[in-house]
Length: 333
Image (cartoon, rainbow, N blue to C red; front, top):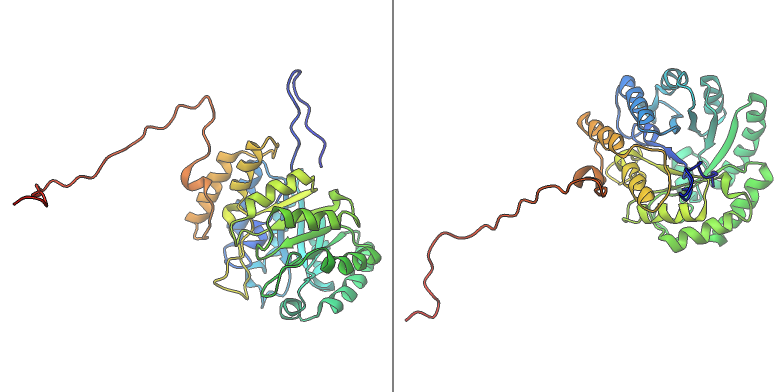
């Protein structure tokens, strides 16, 4: 967990939760948009207080045309001071492109589900681990940090749930390779807080909690609850996606967005954590993104934030709809 911020005398420090915004990658891999819009999204999110981004993916443009401009987006955003910019890669070409673009880190797309691994990047999980070991040496030469996803860490996309027993061989292999920065993804929202805790505790036996990023998806309505559990555990970074947006380009029609940034930020702040974000600015940005044609989910932006004590309550409009016609009693003779 990031050290608490300094506070004024007489007030308790609030633990800081590090949120990583993944909408610039997750949203636009499924919804094509102009490069300028992607750059403006990041600029708006920075003004809302976010500093850590998964900005894009360096993958085949014929398969993921929505991210074909990854290098251009990095070129524009790279100049903004104080940001941490990551990306996804699936092979050496992507890794080299990420390094050339100035990415701080690249995360390899490793799937715990063998069938998805073959469909997504054309290699089995075992073959992917062999490739990752080779890429670790390349990354060291390039001077770029290399991490690994564990997609479907909690199970799915069609099979049963996974737990520590299934993670254990992958965890040992990743440590043997020397890759200790992991993104554990509940990619289809199987886990509730007890399953989140169980797997994180198992992962923490191999790498420090600070090396873990966790990405939960809200397919089954458990995302915000899981975010609160991750904060309580002290996980290093939690992935969020503005307005719950996103999807997989090869799986149209399926819910693939991450847990909603603005909903997660409000829940964390109400639970006493410091996210460093401006909730009103996040809501404004989510609404702007939808007006630009990108579908989104979420609750806060539709019903409003929980009012603060100093705020006057909104006026309540309460009107009964009554019938005007006169009806004879059913017991009339």
